[in-house]
Length: 310
Image: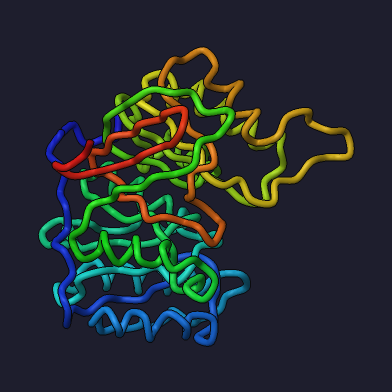
């Protein structure tokens, strides 16, 4: 209903040395000290970083009020001198402002948007507009995440393609699929269902991850995606990290991966588990909106994009 009916996706221009990117915080509050480790790396890439006016503002758990966070993000979207928008962190709050954003200027001159977790809402919104974006590590985590996680972001920002090989998993369902990548945080995928940020997953490769969720709630969200028709038509499913999942005093009876297995058992698309995406140091950048090939083999998993996919 909300998905742009087009197979022609808009890919923002690759960044080049000397370009300016904006650091903004559309969700949780953050301190300048927390993102300092990222600045030298971004400078090494030849980028100039400008911070949003309210990026370090505070309003309870948010990085400023809704109006302040909205203002920073809207200015970054509209400013033609800004070639990329990097979200400092996730948390919670993006869904409070997403429907008030005006993307007309952005669509006239698209630019990369980077982030994950709560930023999934923005990826879904851009997906509905037919624009690629990068689900990837954020400045808050540059001091924690692996070198390859950060390098994978740099590669895609500067015009590269993804070509990832991951370890096999006992729960994997083998097969091959091709389709446009979409997905992100499971909680945000569920909460955006039925909204202006909802996406049509038919024929696409969906990836999911989450953190600090109760097992029963993971099950509830997977059932919601199933009931909403988000699983039946998938080309493939990539299951990333489910970090620090919690259980009640009375056990739920399944771990996160077991919950996913049950939710998709009626379908025959390939599924891989333990893919390095999500709230762990190994968090490989995913180009949302880009056509990819997923190969789930007994000995390895490969996800690749570009004309040299094999």
